[in-house]
Amino acid sequence: MSMVSIQPTTPQGASAAAPEQPKDPFAGMTLLSAEGQAPRAKAAVEITKNALKRIRMAMAKEGVSPEQGGLRLGVMGGGCSGLSYSIRFDSQPRERDRVFVFGEGVETPGDPTDGKPVRVFVDPKSFLYLAGMVLDFEETLMRQGFNFINPNSTKSCGCGSSFTA
Image (cartoon, rainbow, N blue to C red; front, side):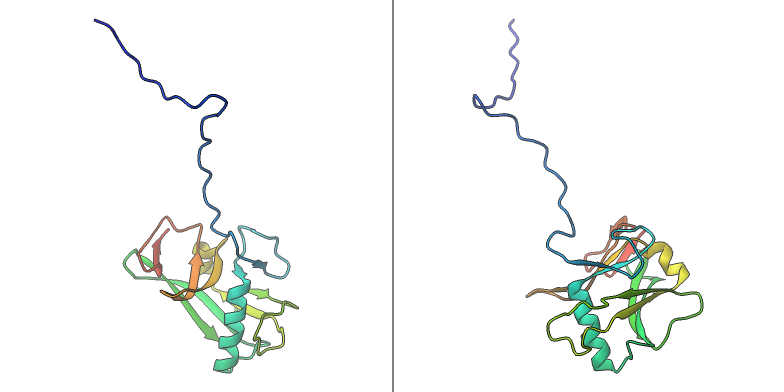
């Protein structure tokens, strides 16, 4: 009885294909770090330039003052994966909120605020789940809205509005 071994071959002079590198989830995005925060800091949240533009437009439309008010990001129990994201405007930060300031001097096309910075408020409990996340605004033929890119999420639902940490 004879044994035959089968080995993969590559053409002469060619090397085997390198393992595929993981895809960068932030490719093509312009990330903005909050004032006083290092880029990609784990103890912060970041937004994209697209998100900055949409936050400014929505704040102007809703009459929210950039000097006093801001965008509140949060997490609450519920949703198909256990936790769901919350996003709304607030007239001022709460006592224990972390306040992140974005966009000082960054101009965005169609900006009704003349480049004023925006503030993002995150309560301490929500920050446990949101630290290190990036808020993006996505606009495609199929979907339009804010997108949470969260490294703390271990599993999320199909719509992306709820997650498990």
